[in-house]
Image (cartoon, helix red, strand yellow):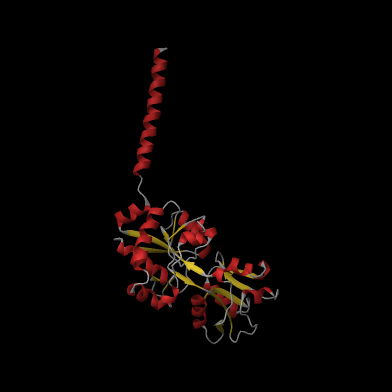
Length: 284
């Protein structure tokens, strides 16, 4: 009988000891910020969408967002920034699955995305426009113009905010062609599978420059002001310490001559600066 009680006591002690070990391991678990600081390396996820983030023909990852990430992490003592190319619609799942530490793709802050990631404060603000055939034969100057003509098709990137923005203006799901990237948007318009493609002003101007003889970006585009895009770096919800460390550096750097010089090659200037915060846009 005594042996039975002793065995039970030992078992209880073992369980308690295991629990203490687990608690100690949890308490000492390294955060993403701590790992990045220790190794001097960070992984950024991006999608090919010039000028926000893209791969050059020689394999370099560049664009407004990756270059900002390099500058900010350098200020934090992190010298190596590795890029992980991902389709736009897979950026948030990839971040949450640990494929990379930060989304650096010019991603817009939206209340829906705020439920899935922790955004830094925005590094730019920008409007949308359309890519159309040369001369704008369908006379399209708003999402509403497309919505009023049910036979027209609009090419948008899967997972992009233009899906919701166009629906808000009356574009039906049957009119939407979802594609993986901006190259596919350009091809859809050129091949006349889509009457227009939607994206940021800078992106659509960049696509138009690739084939100025066939397509153009709509210069006078009317849109709801609430559709103004605010782009930012994004982090896993549990990595708020990393987000806050980045925000501290961003607040001191955005708007400086070095920042403006860094983003100028990608078409950004002082007019893209904003004082809005992620918390404000998220509705927190």
